[in-house]
Image 1 (cartoon, helix red, strand yellow):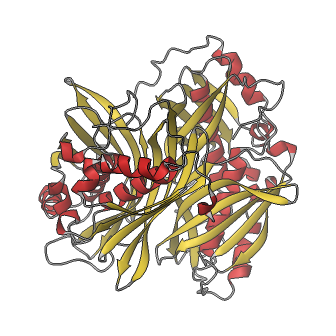
Image 2 (cartoon, each protein chain N blue to C red):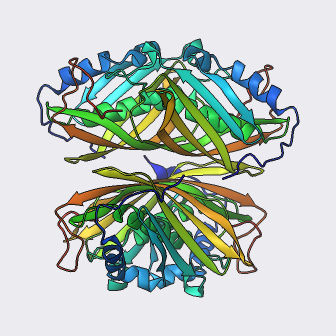
Image 3 (cartoon, rainbow over the protein chains, first blue to last red):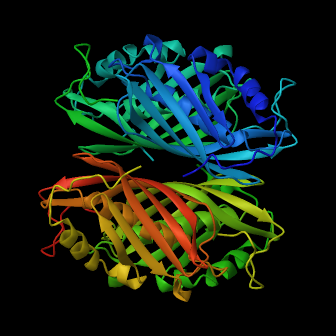
Length: 160
Length: 160
Length: 160
Length: 160
């Protein structure tokens, strides 16, 4: 699964991805940050904080889904042309283990890029005692909207 | 789909569900609250707030997933015995429209209850100009863990 | 879920759907037939036959998936223009009960039509002793390919 | 993803898996055969035959789903105790490319084994001109039923 072997359509993909991420207030609200980025690949990390937990003290499944979704989205977005916007069409997610550990790390890798649709595998790992344990496996479909650059100039009319 | 025709195994289900929900710091962090509850059914609402949005000003897909997941979980949990804990096994979610509107309302309805596994349909609707538009359709699988009451006494060993 | 309230883009949708179905050798191989059709809706039935079963004598999950997928595809296809072809992008399917009974009936209903993507709920019911039991719940995403009519003239380059 | 590093609970797993597979008339009906087997891993192959195709001459998505499902099921079953039966709970499947080629090869690998639930990644590849192309990516959940051996003695009451 050498997902890193993709050539980006837009050499400025890193600026474009980081700029879009920075415009997401919810990513800031949960303390998420991009910790890895390459063509067809994105890693997003959140630290374990009390306000992100569920009733047993583990990181809430909704937080895991949020970072898995964003990592998948930006992995796909990194391969798209400069003049494109991206939407998550759908995903499926298995919760393999509780979100226990110091940090949760989502890694999205493009499985199949496409002009319209891109399929991404996005997994989440918990950092526990210096090692890692997989807590989520997910499979996601994203759509590319051409001619609707994802910039600060405003919301496109037809986003998901 | 008369999902409301279920008889609860535990007549104290409402106290049990509301107590568990209140112990989830993340639900508080996103401003989610239970706005409807019946055997096999749970409704959870969040208001549109800036810190819940993505780059185009819509409610983030991760927030929609979080309330869809919680509504599904508590719909299933409402039918379980007092002496049970619940885990989300997996779900699949389609994002049908952007999360635009004053509030997002997740409604989980049990499709098929079971001693071990319960399948729930959980949809999210946006309140827009007094009407409602469906923004998410999801299908979820949950597992019942007997002998591990979901109470304040501590985290069971294997819950998510 | 009044999925029947759709207006077809092509008034000849019924001929188009039945013609496409008739060109699928696999549907014939499993004895599947269209038993209901309306704009945004398609019903496909197979009888319980020994060659469709798994090790316990129930209809194989693969057969249930096949008719759920076809019912979803033709529900979506019924709403598309004459000049279009359709592909299943992905689906998720829960097996709720064993495929026990005289016949299995898949019913696809469009949840959200779109110019490019259409989302369909497709459920399978078993006919048992004159009644029906739901055996499958599924949620499917399909894509419309314009300018590639699904006719006998040949295979489009990019269809599955 | 060294899924092969699993130790089987039952050393007779190969006989058990092959016996169960041989009792599935539907696998015979589509010409499917087991072409690889190890603890936590199963490969199932079908040749491209006209009766397995859809309207464009490609292998039908229902056939791809059938072998992906069976490969996942037997990958999980290989790790279960002798005294167990298995059911598919649910799966999600992305169709990445058309089923074009001489043969379709499904490979299921256990991602996360469990006493009750097992999660399996099951992918399908097309053999084309001596090489392989991935046509399906799927993620599946299976349940182990103890005390219900999957043998010729009869159908358990609750299996699909």
